[in-house]
Length: 506
Image (cartoon, rainbow, N blue to C red; front, top):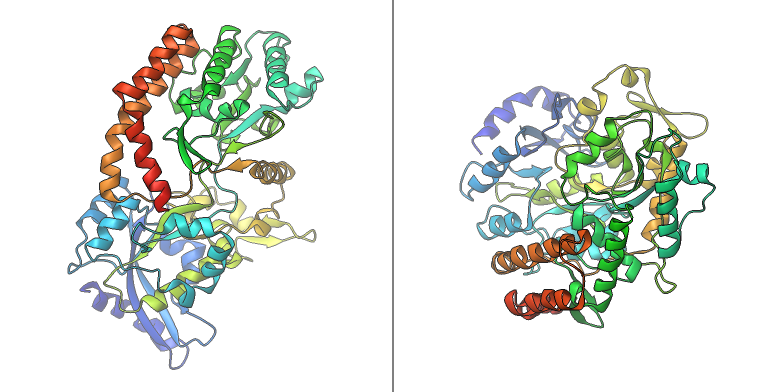
């Protein structure tokens, strides 16, 4: 690359002081990070991982010239402009690569296939892929290639059900376990002033439209993905065609009619929760809400009142949709400009260890945190007095970096409530199931299904809202019209045939 001569000049001082006989290899690393005030060079991670011996032999040292894009649209444009014979980076870090980008850049010769390197160059990642075979499936393209490496979270992102545990205590109620006890709790939240402010301002159940409500469909044994499909006995099924779906809509309509379901549920966006919650810091407003983290919705000191409610039983079983699985795809890729992919992959493999995770999300031991006598980590005085510590020293935020969660380090946090939440998340994960296996669509397949999903999915969501709010009466005639429209106008058989083919090809 043209930039390598410049990189070489910058690294000469380090070469003279490096391990005797060590070879310094200079590379350009590009990626996306829109976190304000952050310079990658000054993070604990790159302080430790740039210009360091690649392994215990000290024979090879990698130096990175870091190119960070701060705007998402500029990073997307930069990726789209990369050409095999052009002046491109050697490696993409925090790459935010979509499956479509991976395939296009692989086909154009910009990225290289990593599938043949992982087992020999990445022992830590390889071990994790054996432990979590669904991750390997998730990152493997339809042709068998692996264009980008993942971030691995054994307990993936979930859309949890958060319930106000303080309200339960104030009313002497037990945690609900099934549909009936759940409704009884919501009625008590509505009627008995659980936030003790003398006002009838409590919102028993708050959701953001059909998206959140479909997670609650587990109370009728339904579990489908964003395309409303799931697999049963080897056949792909469409959730709205199941007889239980009408029962679920009828149940939601009852919640609406009784004032148990937030009247703003179908007329708001994701910002509304935060605005309404932060407008009253004296009293909690929500009884039950849906979110990956309750702090995403309740931004004040009331967040600690909430606990994760386990999935409700249906016919004696508890099954809930696994929203994301354990893999975040597209975090790291090697381009055709890189002259030593093996060394690059040996470098990134260090991130799939506890040490790599700690550097990214906690900083450097001794400088940013220490361990106390109880084995819990504590921020150093220097870190505590830096109000921009998270933004300047750590790598969280922006796009996701490659690596794997260290549960051991997470649980050493000196916050009992945080540990309690982690315990709840682990317990909750025992009930989660992927309704459809991990897959990656080719560009052609994605273009085929997009217009079908845009029309069919929008129709289903619209009719869900209309039935629940009572704009359309949920009677036999109207529901038959709903099903008939799905089948005839939106050709759900073709939609299911597409997904059946995808399922059989996994």
